[in-house]
Image (cartoon, rainbow, N blue to C red; front, side):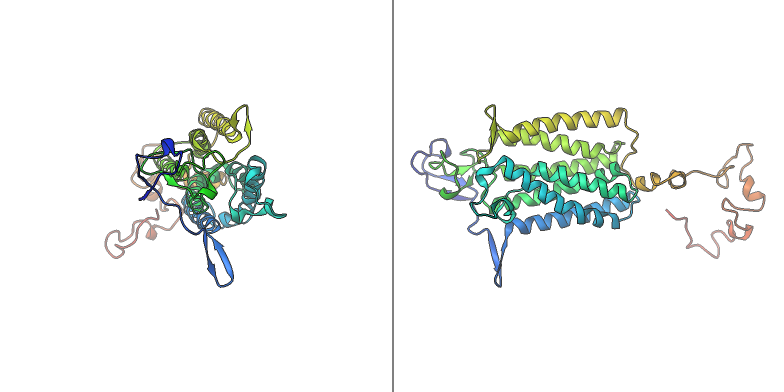
Length: 351
């Protein structure tokens, strides 16, 4: 924290003659030779990379092919960037740089999450279905990873000195240089760090989705529906604080209406999938169980008639199949428990 002297007309943004605050970074990038690397873009690269790695791990645990994640990312990430930029240009035209290439200048900041998720998800579903995988389970695998990527991306907003709320005297208020303050707020110095609020919320929601996936039998794509619901609900709160330029409708920021619609749609979607949906919980081996009838039976632990050795079969005979001379898979007697615990103590059943 640092101290800042109040300016004229600071009003509620000051605490007497001095206020604590979060300082703004002095630079928004660095040079690598002749190339200038923007922190905003770098944070998105890091976030996307982490999202891919997290999704691969989750999809592998579900029994899916990890290579599918790379293929989906190859298509969905560019689509998400395009969709995010289109949404940004439509909803915040005042932030478009005044150059002929301004509508494309993502390196200067400006990716609307709503447009990015919408187009990225549409392209991702297309790729998943093209590979014959379950799109609902894949969506549940990617939901927490998206939140982690969004959280990292908010650090880029910090370096760009954007995505902040109204003036505040709170000790964690964010100092915004005069050249970055919106019209009408030049007399204020510290603002609500809404980028930080969202960063914390995104990580908390990601952790909550992972926990729910492990401890509750939520049918797919229930976790993704909760992601839509939770994030949209938070954005209602965030949009009520933000003062950066935006298109307004009926006196409210356009994003406020999108957030309200997303909260309602996500909630209804979650309720429907859990009450009437035919999806399976996104647990270990779920993708393999959905791959086909044979995979479903094996993953569910179906036993041959008579059950495993030592269990009573339909006729009440324990281990009848083994006694008949063959094991559950038709192995010769020598392979069924022979020398058990004597010459082969290290062998164990695959888990």
